[in-house]
Length: 66
Image (tube, rainbow, N blue to C red):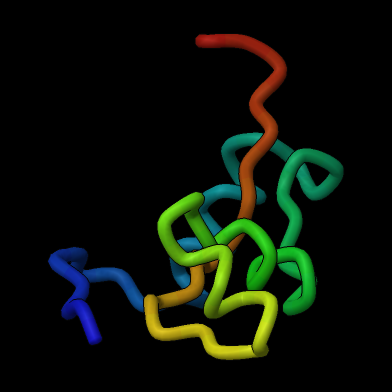
């Protein structure tokens, strides 16, 4: 498993994203996080329920680059 280089833990990352973008722009559902953690090179594993990589803490949907 890949080690994080951030000094923030997952909860702190989610909290910071929500403070920055608002709750409606931050998704944390486990099924959706699992789905987006798979890139095209790992689709086979995902089909069989194998998730080797780290899951993201959240998915952010910013409304602008500001």
